Length: 342
Ligand SMILES: Nc1ncnc2c1ncn2[C@@H]1O[C@H](COP(=O)(O)OP(=O)(O)OP(=O)(O)O)[C@@H](O)[C@H]1O
Ligand SMILES: [Mg+2]
Image (cartoon, rainbow, N blue to C red; front, side, top):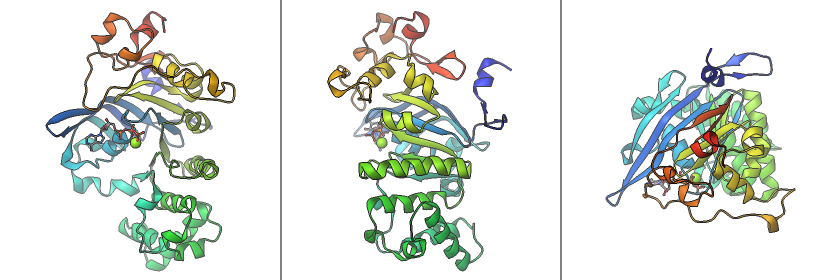
């Protein structure tokens, strides 16, 4: 087996190897807005594995949400999507709306940023879970659906599941509503759970509990998890694997301990130097100079070059490819990988 093929496999705790449930290759997403072309994704490669938490980490506007929504094909005709996203043997990029519908929810479930917007304000939460269970045909009767809804509300940590099922969303706190949104997301045992900044709308004290719940659920239901965040701390705490995004591309990816403890790409290094940690107080932080490219602006070569401390003239000519620097660790920066100058 080649080194590349080995990197495609993970070895679980029992020593078994398992294949990716989702393999994304060269995914591109282009919008046209006001006559302007916006290349939001410029070639994303990503592999997600059962029981593993992968984090997509990047600044605002880097393309994290577009990645999730493109995989789920939520843009309809408003975006042109290229490349492939093979989920359980089928390329989602080639599927039509009718073929996508059963995959959303039962195959791949999305937990949104703001639970309030995802719940129907005028229906009891139990009824909302029952509806999803019946829509996907995972229960035989309404009674079974009601019992399963209460079981799920207990599983996501709501202390009185019977009462919770009878509540309306406005009777719940933000944290409770996000637990309901998670219950809906896992109710059809999805193979892949995608959470797009699922705690930014919540109190800091509740955030950690909800994030812990995700990790627990990922291991107990054995689904793959893609967590989207701009928070390096969240990535460090939760992720087995991290993909760092910048301006629509992944610039570095690999095991969390490798990428965040020993980064190679100049952007990953700059990102880590710009966030506080218990060892680095706020006063010692080094902000990243300049701004990311504005929406719709396509730079030749590496998009980080104008802000990069080690950029060379060649960096503005060729788009850097992700290359393997060690088993399971890839970096898109020839200056860092070929010359070790970063
Ligand atoms: N529907 C759309 N039409 C046109 N451009 C879009 C659309 N959705 C996103 N974009 C553009 O794509 C780029 C990536 O957006 P995206 O929402 O994925 O960023 P993000 O990384 O999720 O940021 P944040 O952390 O702020 O959520 C941005 O430049 C954004 O303006
Ligand atoms: Mg987003």
